[in-house]
Image: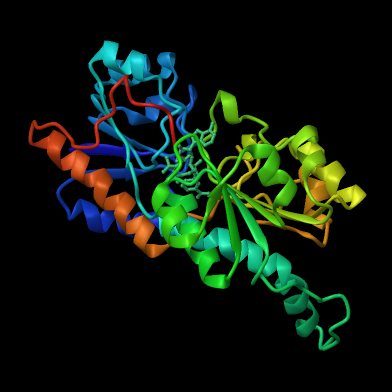
Length: 337
Ligand code: NAD
């Protein structure tokens, strides 16, 4: 098949080429799919899209007019694709339903540990031959209460890891997982109780209407002073301006994020030669108790291999005139990233 891969990143190319196994012609584009770049998909039958590519109705119509019949998403989430329009046009869309919940869960815990033990500050000091320990006091994870909001694939692994540290576990989910209660002592509670009793709060629900700004002035008010907040799920779960106010007042003791509500156009790219226009992010970046990574929680070799292999599982099926096992239907619920 002739394939155009939009928003291709250096970190994934090798994995995609290996998974394609020389069976397909792939044109890699650094550009995202937008109304301005859609024409670049001419001559292709399929496009590979990433999380920030635009799959709106007008763009799908244009892709269809160019001869594109297949869209393989290199992500689990598909909230950026108009599935109804794709169906109407007879275009097949597939995603990567799961690639490695371990990657995201382990990064979540890495943020907790790095913030707690002030690893970024310590590392910078050592590079300047400053071997002082002043200001580097952390806390034992053992015995602390961790509140996990969303105990699906990723949240459950976070629970298991934190149980290993000796944390007490609280959880909130629409669908409680009895195994976590039975084997790891996780107690399901409501959001106010979780906020009031947790020393660490970590977010693992999808971003949907009911979870937008789950962390806001009211929920922050309920939390312990000095709480550690971690978000590796979706930026929109957190009202960042409210957390910034909480950091300034001391209510929030630590803030670790891999996602940010205004990350589009920033995260994944080198913007070091530009002036950052986002005032909230600029303030967060200089606070000593904030740790930000740019949506890299998924970035392990295992996850990249799984993403590439699942993507080409779909492409290979389509090339043989079959259905892909990862095809999305309109009834599918919007979920991951
Ligand atoms: P999952 O579907 O396995 O788990 C999500 C859990 O959230 C489910 O148990 C579900 O019942 C629960 N949930 C849904 N709506 C809820 C609500 N309103 N209140 C409480 N709980 C609710 O998903 P997952 O694979 O564990 O992924 C979790 C999130 O992680 C994804 O939605 C995605 O946004 C994020 N993610 C981030 C990265 C990254 O690189 N940072 C990578 C993959 C996924």
